[in-house]
Length: 125
Image (cartoon, rainbow, N blue to C red; front, side, top):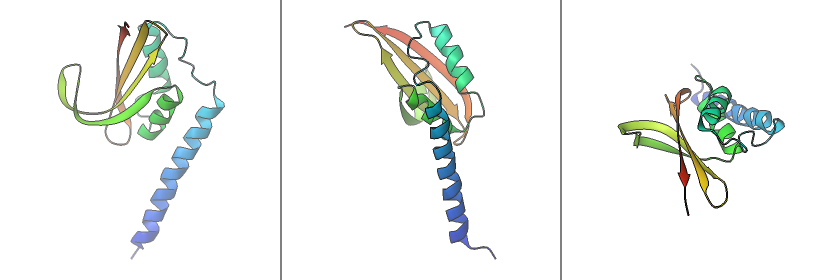
């Protein structure tokens, strides 16, 4: 019979190693690669490349926050008119007077990214 306490410790250690390795991986790359992007099409392509379907949700969150996005978990929320969705909502505003708002919904199954959608808008003072 296995020790449930020992198994729990192993799971916590695995989780911690994923977080630490993700942080190290992304800290070695150029910070804020998306900082100068102005085109929604280009931003979508860059984020899709950096956060592919199947990526661990924790790793995706570390990347998005490293790019300056503020991310929060949404359960049973609304995205683009669809209700009852669970997703990681990441948002950032770039610019001075007239800002570009970037919003991403990282759809997931609780552990990995299953889809990624973006919306963008100009925000006037």
